[in-house]
Structures are given as C-alpha cells and as structure tokens.
Image (cartoon, rainbow over the protein chains, first blue to last red):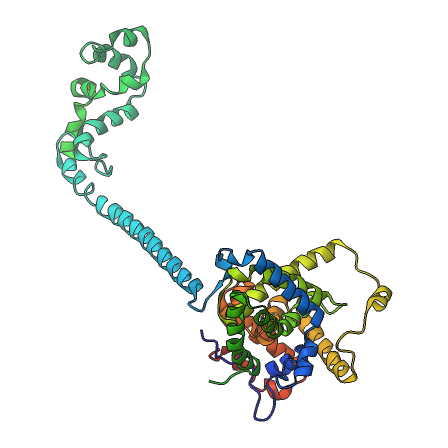
Amino acid sequence: MNADEPLGPEGTQGRPSLPELLAAALLPGADDTDNADRRASAVDADAERAAVAAFRAARDAGAHRARTRRRDDWRPREPGRARFSLRAAGGVVLAGGLLGGVALAAAGTVTDDPPPRPTPRPAATSPKTPATTPPRPEAPAPSRSVPPARQERTETPAKPGPKAKDKSETPREKSKPPKDKGKPKKPPKSEKPHPKDKGKGNAKPKPKHDRKG
Amino acid sequence: MGQGGEPRRAKARDEELGRAVAAAQEGDEAAFAVAYRIVQPGLVGYLRGLVGTDGEAAEDVAAEAWLEIARDLGRFRGDGAGFRGWTATIARHRAFDHLRRQKARPRPTALEQDLLELPGPHSTSAAALEAVSTERVLALVATLPRDQAEAVLLRVVVGLDGPAAARVLGKRPGAVRTAAYRGLKKLGERLGLDGVTDDGPGALGESR
C-alpha cells in the first residue's frame, strides 16, 4: 500500500476533486496558504497560547524526557507491519506444525491398519480356531486362545460357572486360594479357565466341524 | 499516479511540520506554535465530525487534546506525517471521553445554546457563507456510517495516508481504504457532484 494512491474520484481538468471540495469546506482558511490572515483566523489565538503554555510547563517540568511507548512511535519504518509479518510467520509455523501432526497421525492410522488384517488369515487356517474367528482384527497369538473361550461363553452360559470353578481352582489359582474359595461365585474368573474346559469336554466336537466344513 | 488534492498539500506541509516538531522536541517554543498552527485546522475539522458542531465542542476537545500533546511531546517519535497520526489518535480518545460525558449529562436547550453562543472568528460575512457549506458538508458526513465518516475525515481533513488512518482507527488498512472510498462516493452522490463521481459503479473493483 502506498500513500500516493488517489483517495477518491479524481477531479477532471480544471474541476476540483471531491476530496479537495471537502477539504475546502471543512478546513476554512487552511487552503489559502498565502493568505496569512485567513489562516490565522482558522486557529484561535487564545487556544494556541494555552497549548504553548502547556508545552512550556511540560518542558520545564522535564516531562519531555519521558519514555516512548509503542503508541508514540510513528516512525515511517512501519514497525506495525514488521510486527504483523512476524505474527503471520508465527502463525504459519504453528499451522504447519499442526497440519504436520495431523498428517503424521493420519499416516500412523493408515499404516497401523494393514498389519492386523493379513495376520488373522493364517489364524483362520490353523486347525483349532473355528470359522467364526477370522473377522476379528486381533493379533494372531491371542486370537488362538481367546476366541474359543468366547464362543463357549455364548454356547453355554450357565454351565461354565460351576464346572470352571471346580477345575480352575485346583491347578491354576493356587496363588490366591483363600479369596476364591471364600466366594461361592466368581463370574469373571470362571471365564478364564475355559480353554481348559474346552480342551477336555466341550471343544472336542468343534474341531471336527471345522475340518468337515 | 494521480493524487487527491488534500494529501498532496498535506505532504508538502509535512516536511515543514516535521522540522517544527523536531525543534519543539528540543525545547523550541516557537516551533511548537508552528506545529500547532499546521495541525490544528485538520484536527478541529476531524473533531467536528466526531462530536458535532454545537457550540465550541470540537474546539474544547481539541484544547484538551493539545494539553496532552504538549505534555507527551517528548515521547513522540516520527516525522510530520507521523505527528498528524499521533495527534489525531490523542484527539480521537479525547473526543470519545467527551461523548461519554455528554451521554451522562443532559444537553442544554437550544435557547441556552443561543445565549451561550459568542461571535467567533467566523462571524464575517464571507466566512459565514463558508460556515454554511461547512455545516452542510458535516451534516452529510454525519449521515455516513461511522467507520466511513471517520475514514473520510482522517484522510481528507487530517491529511493522513491509508496506513496512518488505519492505525488511528485500529483497523486494517484495506478496511479503512474501502470505507474511505465508499464514504467519498456517497458524499459525492449526495452533494450532487456528478462531475467528480463519473467513474461509475464498477470503480470499486478497480485497483485501489
């Protein structure tokens, strides 16, 4: 932006422009730089004397040695624009960082997804896993042991309670026997030992189905 | 590139103003008076647009502003154009103070106004004619939205360039430039100055 741009509609040749007309109307006497009397009439002499007196008082009191605040700095170096560009640069850096972070996060989710998908397939071919397990996007190692347990849960909701208790208490849960024995029912823990149950009783028919189908 | 009349004239005087301000900051009392005479007309014109033309309100606000200008002159840094912007900012704040006070206090009746009114420096017949047109122009300016009126006054009457006017108003230069242009266009239409608003409706999109 430059200060030389035309402010408003230009006056055509010989005719004053609108800004000139406005200035002439609103600045009585200011246009006549040659006519000292008219210029003087635009400025009230008493007001001028009061201003000069205030100036003198401030100067003599040492007020003019006060520090320059930002709002007092009107040097044409345009510090305001420099500040703005700094601010803009900071904004760009911040926005870039945010966008980069979003991009990295997005890339992470994209690359994380594929690995689980290929691994369940080999799990599906393994003999012990039933046909219903493959769609689960879980890691291969837990998928072998966990899915069968879940399946049995759905098949026999009432059975595993007492059965699991009997068998699980003896081999597995030796570490915390008092608590388990004290409680007659322990639904969460009864689910864990299922794999063992399955291996002995319930799970036997299933591998057959898988092999047939 | 063409020039509006007022900015060019203001610029010519800005050098003189800059010298006067620099000398005043060194303690030169006469130089301060010179700066006062250069700046005061534009300041009063701007303040008339802000606080109206009733009585001597604009002159009173200007006097308050000058007290502050005289006190803080040592803090100021800049040239003549910068001094116009700095003083306009101070005057603007004093004008808003005045308007707040006025809102809190009922205005005197028209009769009191007439009694209080003293013959001012514009009481000669030639100046009276001029004053009428000043009143008319100010009345028209008062019909503009505030941002447009202030932008027009700062650029035309105070003689600030676009960035300086924007700094006084605390707005973006582009917004002030647009406001000044729209305000001038409306004023031209309402003043019936067909000759100076010939550039047509599409002019806003042109490179300005």
